[in-house]
Amino acid sequence: MQSVPTVYSWLSGGNTVTNTPALVDDHIIQAAHVKLKEAVRRNFEEPKAHLQSFYERYNYIVNGDAESEIKKFMASKHTFEEYTEVS
Image 1 (cartoon, rainbow, N blue to C red):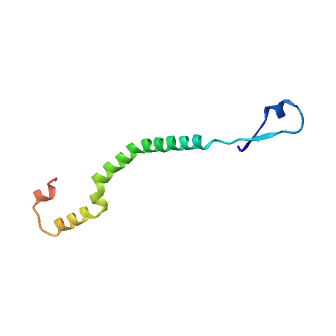
Image 2 (cartoon, rainbow, N blue to C red):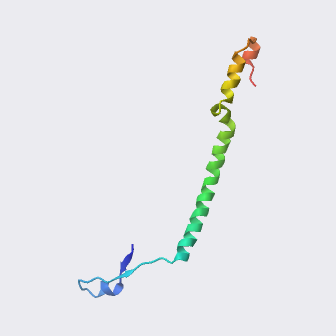
Image 3 (cartoon, rainbow, N blue to C red):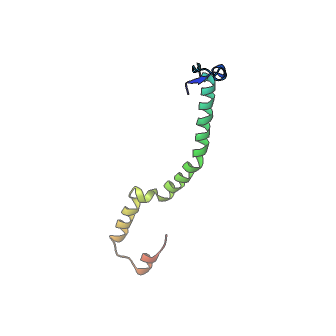
C-alpha cells in the first residue's frame, strides 16, 4: 500500500476519493530488519547443530575414507573372527 484514502473523502459521500501517501519511517524499517535478522539467526541455531551432528557422524562415508578402509581391508586375507569383528 503506497497511498491510503483519507477519512474526509470517505465521509464526504462524493465520487472523488482523496488519497494520502503512506510511508514508513526508516528507523522503523531498520528496527524491524534487525529484529527479523535476530529471529532468523535464533531459529536456525538448532537445525544447524542437528546438521553438524550428521556431518560429524557420516562425513567419513561421503569423503571416501570408508571406501578406502574397506578396500584396504578386503585386499588382504582375514580370519572369520576378523570379518565379524565390530570396531
